[in-house]
Amino acid sequence: MEVESSEESLTYWLTAEELEAIPTAEYWNDQEREKQKEWAIESESDLKAIHYVRHQTNLEDSLLEAVNWVRDELGISLKGTGLDLAAGTCWASGLLLSRTPLGKALAVDISVHRLDIIAPMVLHQYGIEEKRVERIVGSFSTLKLPDESVDHVYMVQAYHHADSPAALIREAARVLKPGGVIIASGEHPITEEDIFRKRNRNWVKSIATLPVASSIASAMLGRKLSPPRKRFATAWDDLRSTDPLKGDREYTLEEAEHIFTSAGLTFHPQTVAAPDDDRMVKSEVNLIGVKNG
Ligand SMILES: C[S@@+](CC[C@H](N)C(=O)[O-])C[C@H]1O[C@@H](n2cnc3c(N)ncnc32)[C@H](O)[C@@H]1O
Picture 1 (cartoon, rainbow, N blue to C red):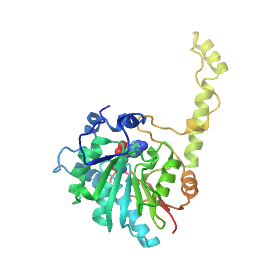
Picture 2 (picture 1 turned 60 degrees about the vertical axis):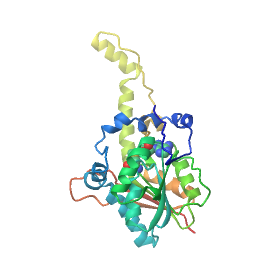
Picture 3 (picture 1 turned 135 degrees about the vertical axis):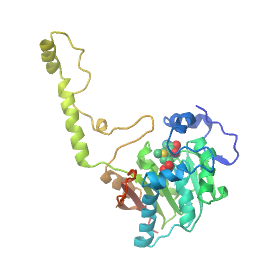
Picture 4 (picture 1 turned 45 degrees about the horizontal axis):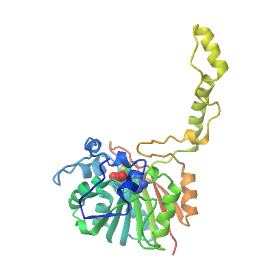
């Protein structure tokens, strides 16, 4: 994995060894693979990254919906210093710095080339000077920031990538000043029904691999089948499909609520308005937490 960067414009919270030890770091630092992504850009004149979040998906609208709701319903406008977790190309910081009174941002990610090469181009496309965004190679689960040091925290398509969502939100709440908000946008929690359906599917699969079922099948087929490999009982964790490459996790809204409230936050889930055109729905729900002052 290529994790070196000669750029002095980045801040490093992690050594190369610490970065390599993060299981998903190899995927997020694979520059060749990233070039295949539909939003990949190589020059500032290429607007594909912005086009992706604005016109191909509902990501930009969804984040703005959360920010506007927080302003209109809670009377909190984003200003001061924002913390952009799993910032990637830093488009969310570009958007919020250009559309809210936010003064500056700290952008944390484990993808060196996204922060180093792509983010400056995207920030310029939003009309934002690079110096307003400190780009930090670091893990969002261990923030090297003092308690109550940032005004607001936002993250897009990030919460479901956390190894431990509870640790992520605890850390975010720790560094957040009282009166600040945490917005996790680009989320799609599953429902109890999804879990129930999946559990039933797993039971059917499990039954088909029971010894008795497999010996009946062997007799009928007239040949010996390989021994059953699956357990009959389905462990709870088996129901949560995770993508080991990218670290995706499934969770319910109730679990998110528990995580936010356990971190001392007031929880406000927001169902995102469905786009009235054919954009991909990359964001169904915004998870919003407020640290009461
Ligand atoms: C789906 S992308 C979203 C990026 C960006 N927020 C956006 O919406 O385009 C997930 C991001 O999470 C980052 N990431 C994954 N694990 C991380 C960790 N432990 N700490 C910080 N960033 C992480 C990846 O490098 C990647 O940029």
